[in-house]
Amino acid sequence: MNRRNFMGFGVLAMATLPSVLSAIESIDFRKTKPDTWTAKTVQDAIKALYGDIKPEESGVKVKAPKVASNGGAVPVTIKSDVPAKTVAFFQNMNPESAVAVWNVPEDGIVDYFVKIKLKATDENGGNGELTAVVEGKDGKFYIGKTKLQVAKGGCEG
Amino acid sequence: MGNMKIKAKEKNGVVGVKVLIKHDMLTYDQAKKKGTEANFITHITGKVGDKIVYDASTSQFLSKNPMIKFKFKGKKGDELTMSWVDLSGKSVTESKKIK
Image 1: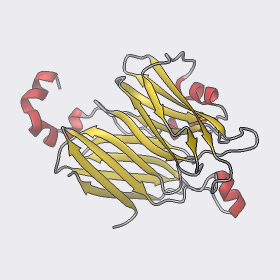
Image 2: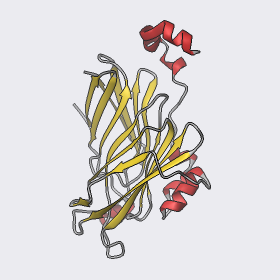
Image 3: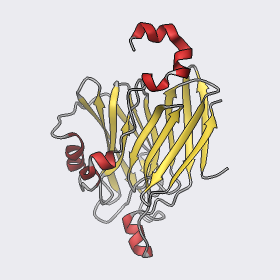
Image 4: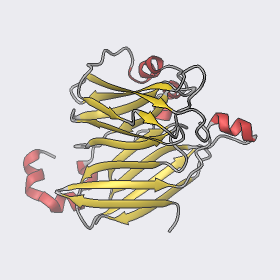
């Protein structure tokens, strides 16, 4: 369906022909990229998901509290204005690094909020880094990071 | 009402969604301590009609009773349908009208 038809049908088309307009289908990255979820480091997880990529350090924002008092539920927001195909979210405090991979719908808005678990241990001293990678529709990759401190002794990790 | 608390509100053509899901999100480590099987949500999908508006594959590191928020281009009066699946294969689907 081209742009002109789309405009012509307008709202009616949106309501009646959603299956034609939405080319994308649900993707289960746990099935398509199983190694992503067992990778211990952020680098390995990114490699398992996207291959050997050299992401640009721009265009992606990861927002989290500088100091999280409860490692059981740390609020994180990932934002990007890059027209995206997929978004992947990793951290370096838990035994494995992958948290979530989003399959961005056609004309989707990348503004994702999740609450996550981060485990403060003696090894990491409560210091962690959150990493988000955006796979753009232009075929390029973009990366954003933020550091944070998680208080030890929070309820479960 | 059941498992999910869904709020969906349209403003200037963009729908802001907030979803709270009741789930233990038991990690492998926690399950080991408790002597049970790990079980956590592995996939969350949001749809309006047949159109996917949210599609996330997730790991054990979402918080217990996870909360998600997202935005998409949509309109008032449409019905947003959220579903999740967990490791045990259980799945829950609930709908909410966009305000």
